[in-house]
Image (cartoon, rainbow, N blue to C red):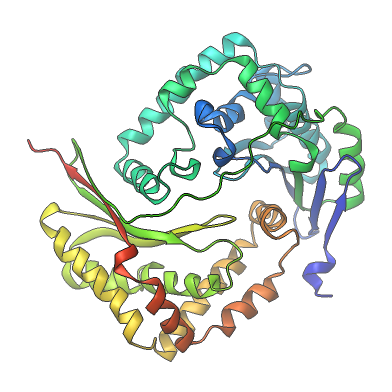
Length: 416
């Protein structure tokens, strides 16, 4: 067993909750998260955005704590409390001193198990979330990506904004929240992950102490919907902005696709930083943009890959041609030995540097459990990256970079 695995332990609690921890005595901190395997793709269309709205509402008071008490109990001992929602999971987490771990887990367990959902707070938070929507719409990057995602997953929950829509959020009731908790916040969907100077047996004991009143669930939860067919599309939008925002991409690989390490390296070579091909050959060589990058988002059964660029509307056709030129190069030319070695070093460096954060370690514990039902050690990831060779990247690229599968979203400045 590697030294890394020796410090990682997992327990299936009798309730069905999974507990995963990583011990690290070189720090005085702990990062602990309650992860719920439910996200926006588990929602029915009538309640789009309820996962995110529920995340907000769990901060609004419990049977034991007021909304102020929840944050004050953590912050008064030097901790940090927050949460986030994705398409496939929700996380509530605390970073704190190791001596305050029990307090952190007490607060988190109270939030998740005993929310009150006061009616007046539900109505107030609707206004907050709608303002959050407006904030995203005012940001051209967020706006163009939201529309691009909608093209990738048309008529599917993955294509909806995680935050939902004004009409759905405005219609939420307290009963909607209670029913969703009963459907999705059940022990079999709960993972408790902790990383830092923490003892696994102590965590298991505290979970037994604090987690005792979860709903059994009423069995009517809507699991993630099957994927809809993907058709290439083009969309042009207009906003009162100065810069043009352009995204091109396609559906991509799932979290467990055997080719995922090839795609990670391709993504690094194409758009992984200032030394990448896109940055060097479009920004540095021609000055057509300030920001350009490629991205790759993986889910349990699919993914999304693309290139984003902010440019002038006069340069769009030039930028499009240059991006396709880079795709063609990957299809027809073997990546050089030096460039491939540097891409591997960059990818491995990011993985290893991330381990200096206990929050990142905690996140890796939880995501490994969510997507693979086991912890994937860094040595395994590094070996998988090292095993990818230049010829396999070219054969992968020949299939993947088929321009007939690439959709486009263009956000243009409105005419004055």
